[in-house]
Length: 188
Image (cartoon, rainbow, N blue to C red; front, side, top):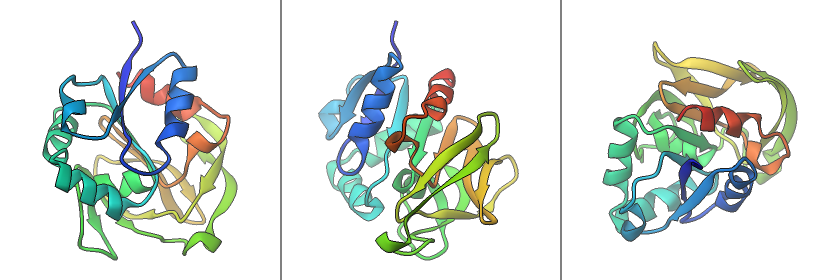
């Protein structure tokens, strides 16, 4: 039976994640409002986009608390860019945290604005070398004990795993390399 993935679809690059996950045989269910949370998925994707907008919609719609409960109960999560910001326990340059389930400190827009976006190739632990697309990306300034560092770029942590949470500064969904999405599906 196909794994059922809930994809936060209130704003951002959710369609690209859905396309990649469907190509891998997963069933995707868009999470846009409280009614979409009635059937609990097997896993959760928090996509890139505007973290402040996503946080505001999560709060105003009432979806923040139930989704946080899912994460705290152990639901596997793949979070990219803004999703990483939503999971972070602390933000070094903002006070507006969201789920606070990932024990890291993140710097928002760490590489600058849109003109600071770039593509590189780097090693991802357990995966191998892969292309990494950074779009107005954050990076992780500090990790707590128990957080596994998976990748670094220019001396900054850009991918981590903590229990069932896989969080990335970059966007694997905009390329053709499915290995991180495959690793996420294997977490279920």
